[in-house]
Image 1 (cartoon, rainbow, N blue to C red):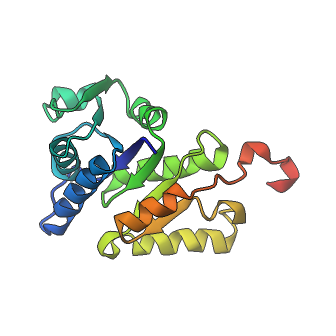
Image 2 (image 1 turned 90 degrees about the vertical axis):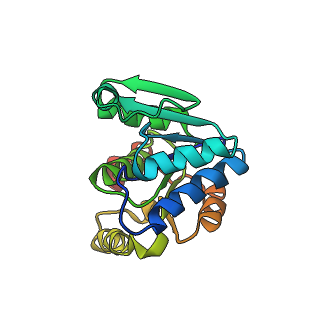
Image 3 (image 1 turned 180 degrees about the horizontal axis):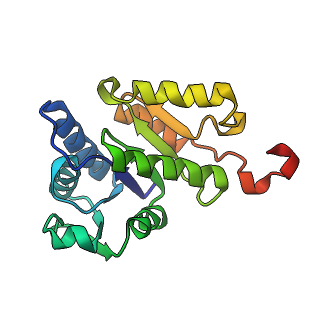
Length: 193
C-alpha cells in the first residue's frame, strides 16, 4: 500500500489516548513509507495524524470541502490540499487516491466514511482493504453489530471479512497487506442475491 485514507474525528476528546493514537498512526505510516490521505483538517485526531506524519517526513494529502476551508479549519501544511465542493466528492477522492482505508475513533462523519468504504467494496467500486483500528475497545459495539448483521443475513458470508479489525496498528497493517478482495455484488447473478 502506497497511500492509506485515514478516517477519524476532528474532535479532541478529553482522554489523551485518542490524540496519542492518532499521532502514532501518522508517524508509523510515514516511517513505513505509506502516504496519508485524510480529511484535510487541522483539529482533533485529524490534525494529530497530519502533523505527526509530516514531522516524520511522510506525504500527507488533505481533501476538504470548500465550506470547511472557508471556516479556516484546513491544514495548509499538507503536502497537497485538494478543495472540493461536496462531502461525496471528498469521499471519492479518498477512494481514488488510496490503496486502503483505516478508521480510527470518530463520530458520525467517520462512520459515514467507514460504511461507504465497506459498501463500495461489496459493490465492487474498489478492491482495497478496509481496516478498523479498534483501539481501547472503542468499536466493540460496532464489531458486535456487524456480526449481528451477518448472523441475521444482511451481510453475505463472502462479505463478512471486508471490515478488517484489529486492536493494534501493526497487526491491522499486516492483515490489510494480506487482504484478498471478496466476490462483489456486481459479479453475482440475481439468484445469488
